[in-house]
Amino acid sequence: MIAIGAALVAISGCDTVGGRADAFADAYNKVAADFALANVNSTLPTSGQASYSGLAMVAASANMNNDVFDSYVGTSEFTASFNNAGGNISGKMSDFAVREMVANNDPDAKPFFDSLSQLDSTTTTQTAASIAAFFSEGELANGEITVEETAFGNNGAFTPKLQGELQHGTTTLVVSGNGNGILGGNQANVVAVVGGTALQNGFAMTRNGVNALGLAAAIATKD
Image 1 (cartoon, rainbow, N blue to C red):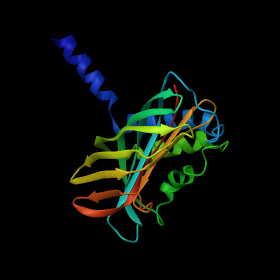
Image 2: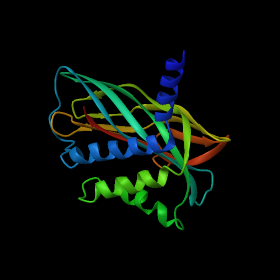
Image 3: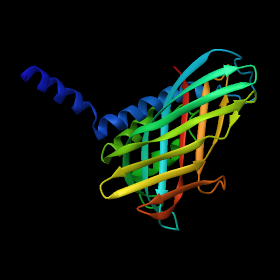
């Protein structure tokens, strides 16, 4: 009994805010290594399956100025099957850490925003480490966002339905509706999915029951 209890403590200790932030950084660096090779016009496989893992990012604000918001970093995973006409894909975004961020006034948050445009930069490792350090001071977020099984054509494009809830403290974020997705790169080595309230694609968020502005995004590469 003592040995079992000790094992459970050891396992639960792995699921910490810092652990999730580090997992995001690892996923970020994995994605960065392949993302520069992505080409949405490449030829997709015509048979077989592939699994993908990578990063996930979610941001939501009930403030119409969008200057104060909750920002989440986590990981993503997808499974795709291929055929002559395209195929099917499904996945999820999960294991989030969250921090409240002030976009215009928080210098510690700058690496997070810089990361959105630095996936093909030589500074990604340093950026990922900075992001992990920033989010390790945040909170655990419960819940996940599913990417329901969706068909894609031989151009790799698809319109997935995103659905889920994330909770931390007294905050509940509900995500629902359509996003945009693409498989690209050499033999579909990259998956990218994004849903955003500004995309006018049937995507919506509520934060504690109030309509929110924001996005949910995932980028993953073949395992």
